[in-house]
Amino acid sequence: MTFDRAAILALDAADPLAGFRDRFAIPDGCIYLDGNSLGPRPVAALDRAAHVVGVEWGVDLIKSWNTAGWFELPTRLGDRLAPLIGAGTGEVVVTDATGINLFKAMAAAVAMRPDRDTIILEGSNFPTNNYMAQGLAALSGGRLQVKLLEKDEIAGAIDTRTAAIAVTHVHYKTGHIHDMPGLTARAHEAGALAIWDLCHSAGAMPVDLNGAGADFAVGCTYKYLNGGPGSPAFLFAARRHHGQAIQPLTGWWGHAEPFAFRPTYAPAGDIRQFLTGTQPIVSLSLAELGLDIACAADIGAVRKKSMALTDLFIRLAEQRCPEMFGVASPRAAEDRGSQVSLTHPEGYAIMRALIDRGVIGDFRAPDIVRFGFAPLYLRYLDVWDAVDILAEIMATAAWRRPEYQVREAVT
Image 1: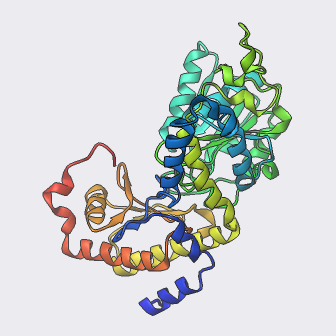
Image 2 (image 1 turned 180 degrees about the vertical axis):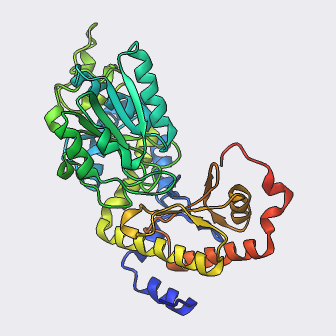
Image 3 (image 1 turned 180 degrees about the horizontal axis):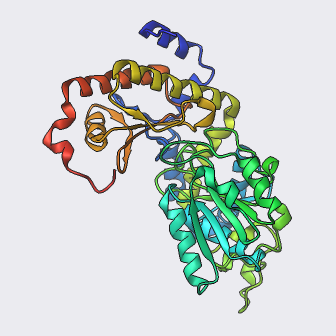
C-alpha cells in the first residue's frame, strides 16, 4: 500500500482513539516515541498533585489516611488495574518497584515448591529480573539455581527441577511476544509455577492472566499506564494461592492486623500480604490518573492501532532509509508488542540526533534504536513526520556531529 500525507491524515481523522490525545500533556514540537519507557503526564496530574500535597497532606495531615482513603490506595488501584490484565477483584496490589515485586513473587513461588531448585528466565531480557533472581539464589545458600535461556529454549527446559519460570511477556529490546497460555500450561504440566512480567504489555495490548492460568505477575505503571516517573509497580497473585503464598518481605502493611502492632508477624490472608511498608501516597495518587485513562479505552482498539502504527513505521523507514537499518522486532505485527527496534552500529548517535529534532525514542546497547508507539496519544501523522526526520538525519549524516558521540548517563 502506498501512503502520502493526505492518506495519513485520513487515518487520523478516522481514528476512534483520537480523542484520548487531549488527555495528555504533549509538548509542542515533540513526537514522543518513548512511552514504552516513560509515559507522558496526564493533563489532570497537576491539579491532582496540588490537591494531594496542598489539601490532603497540607491541611488534613495524618487524618487523610482515613478521610482521603490513603490506606486503601494499593488495593483500590489494584482493583482498578485488574481488568486491564485479566485479573479479578482482590488479586492485584499497586506497590513498590517491579524488581521488588518480582523478588516477592519468585520467593513465594520457590517456597511453594520446596523440592525444586531452579528458576528459568529469559537471559536477554531486562537484566534487573535476572539480577533479582540471582540475589534470591544467593540468599538460598546454593540451593536455588538460576537458568538463563532464550525464547525458543524455555519450554523445552522446564522439568521436574523447575520451581518457576519468570518470563517477560513482551521483550524490552526486540518487542517479541511470548505465548503466555502455552508457556504457563507447559510449566503447570511439569508441576512448576508461572510468573509473568507485564511491563511492556499492560495498557498496550490485551492480557488475560486468569485465562492463561498465570500464578503471579508483576509490572510497572510508568510506561503505557502513564503513572509518572518511578510510579509504583503492581503485583498479581492468583486467588487460589492466597493464604499459602508467603512473600519474604514481611512488613507491617502485609500483616493480618497491622494496627494491632503485635510483636510477631502473621500474614494477611489475601492480596494485602504482598504489601510491605508504608506506601508512597503522592505517587499512588498520580498513578490513578493514568489508570483512569487506560481503563476508559477499548483495549482491543488500542492493540489494533498499535499494530497499524508499528507496521506503518517499519514500512516507511525501509522506504525512506533503504538498507540503512536492521529490524530487530518481529515482522509480523501480531508477534510484537507496541514498539519497533531498529539496529545500527551508530544507534546511540542517531537517537541523540533524533531527540535534538524533537523525535524522542531511546537507545538500548549495543545497537538498538528503540521506538515506542502508545496508541492513546500518538497519531499516524507523528509516524510520518518522525520517519521524515529520521531520513533527513541519515541522508545528511547529521548523527556524526561530535556532541552526539558523547554518552549521557541515561540512554
